[in-house]
Image 1 (cartoon, one colour):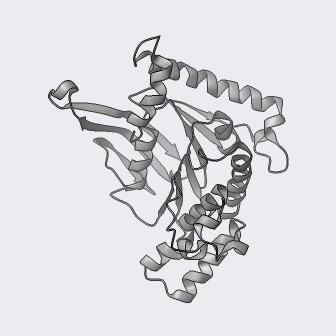
Image 2 (spheres, helix red, strand yellow):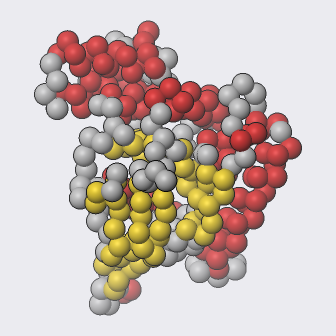
Length: 288
């Protein structure tokens, strides 16, 4: 049996938050007893209600935060901080506006001390991988949202990380661009063989992209169930969304998720204001 690429063992994450109306600080549990294995080269999609700890989990995987208890292993070794073996792609592109697409992709290699010729060659290779070779000398303001996100993906791939961590990278894009980038990401994944952990609010997106879909509970976040996507939905030559099986799997994921969304709404301002409050709470809980 192969060793898991990523292993989460009983991970718990707590934060200290201000008390209500100036009261004493209290402990806030974002994640509780999260255990999960991700295999080498696997594409794992992660879904859950707003505020359930998805982004906190990604921060832990990226080494941007540490668990309050439990541990996270990468190739059998504890994650102790950020490193170049993990690339992160966020919803915000975070491109340098004064750098061209090529220069943005090459930035991490420049920081790592890679020579000019080599880093530009590698940056061109990854721009070509995301089908942006013709836009290497364009600045971010000259690129569409989808192109900017492709540059961000190329930048994360340029220093050849083992794992790609993606936090709702397509959420701000229109539906057509999002579907196009989903197809591109699957092509890149098949080409590179990277291990990918992909957070999304979109059930369709999770089923289209993931080999498995992990559904999280309402806060504190736990892994409620992991669903294996049937091989018949892994086609790279047809629109799997049109298959009856896609609707069945989507319904299975939504049924699990809906229970947790209702719990989240019930825990907010009550049945009258619960739905409206859930939108506001997403900003309040954006760090979790």
